[in-house]
Length: 212
Image (cartoon, rainbow, N blue to C red; front, side, top):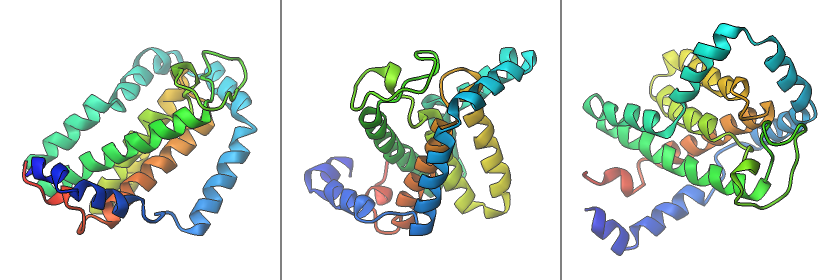
């Protein structure tokens, strides 16, 4: 049961499994870092361009709705609803979200990048607990891509549709003025990596075998 999971130390075994190896290949890691670092150089002009030419209907109606879809309660509701369709998939989605939340929050606090509504230019201050400087990576985007990746791995035929929807939610964080483009890119990568951490070890993780 859940109690013995913590008391027996099984949670530590799961932790070692999840963080014992890196889920992205060396090529994927190199491409991610290279693409992200290049994008960082163009954060300001891309952000300004999107803000300037964003249609009013998107700004007032579409973007706020998409952004809400990337919030934890909504994603958790989707994962919870899946228990009636596929209980194992539901557990995997929830654990992917949890792992992603840990990964994302640690990175946010360590990197310390300003949000667009705080400074005119992307600014780094290093380790911080100040939410104004927790833009990198985007939490909405990483959580959305964590859920999307679990679904895409289960339903590869529809992966293009799943990732397209996740991408729209990520872009909405730019149009909402909460993140720079690089934050969305790295957020997506963190979400994918977090979900793959869980998926690749799903048969060995004790937590996924617990009965709730």
